[in-house]
Length: 551
Image (cartoon, rainbow, N blue to C red):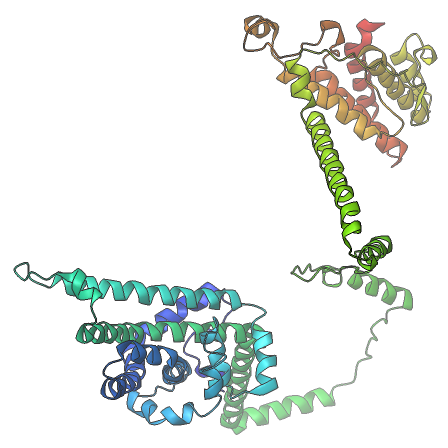
């Protein structure tokens, strides 16, 4: 197979691009494809008309069933045209029996109703595969594009149906208005000439649609082979090889045409160089083992050695059947029930018991459903009944967070002055730690934040930012005054929280200060990066603006 003669560009295509390519190729070669499909089918249809004149439905059914036999010649023409070897309709018709010699019985029996017929046919016709080799090849091809091949079959079937209806309507439109025909009795009766005419139109429609269906499935098959066998890369490598050969031939011709004088001058120059006193060559310094090791580490640290590729797909879930098996006690109970004698007395004893058991199970199911509904809709029910939940008791303020003492009693009278004194004294960790724990202490005491030991510094800062956003989204006092009261009909079911229970809002300035201080503290405590003095002084000024009035 000469890939350089491929009539289309070999590249990776999606299934729908491949089908579109097949439609374009079928449009270019539609007439010979139409003829090689129609002529054998028309011969069979004519033989049925001669042998079975009273069975038009059976005749068109036979033509429809033998579609895989008629599809092979258009596939042959399309494959030769794709590789630059056009075949005429007459030459293709001469190969009708030769092309249908392989696997013809399978294609008209169990493979006839295959939804991927156009996609699978090239494996038989072009690759000449059968048996286990064909099954393995089909399994590889169907890993992709099988869904598109199925949709292609369904679409072609519907296109044939719509075209047949359109032709029938067109014939009806050509009937003159002066001709009065009662169509309902005519269609309901067994009029053979009308049925044969409709079947002839069906044959023409099938022959017109078949080239698009066959060539689209063939291009879908070609696209899958390009993906599997990397035809695009092989063509590029072949082009590079041919170009290299042409350059070698061109260089050889140039060397052959070089004048003898140039060769003589080159020889003289070489003799002159050889006659000159040799200079001491400087040996290039060889890398030491340590330098070589560093070079290897740099290469290994590159992106080429750290490429990660994720492949997703569908697979069957592994189920542990031992865990999902029936329990032993249930099996023993059923065997015990089955082993008991089935006399009239036992039936009279077990009947009421089974009825009572079913009744108890139904009552338990109803009670469970009621409990679930009450729990699921507890909030709307509580609001409709105007129940007020008691505020949860506030937890005791923690004494330490992240190893820092956050009690108000542990803080100095002037926090910022002590922070700056420790900073200028060289104890940066104690200085910034004092400012950070003073901030936490004021947030807990003044703003009622409930920080726990399970939180990190970043999560505490996120809680502050979250309350700041909620404070901005809350309605203003003027807007609250315009809203209806709780006694209005629209809000009769709302539960209003007492004003004293609302937490203190957080301003944007305080939230930004907490974010900056947390970042500086984390960099100093964990990364050992000391912030600049000006930044610490700015943080102290922001702390005075945020908490100076609380002292």
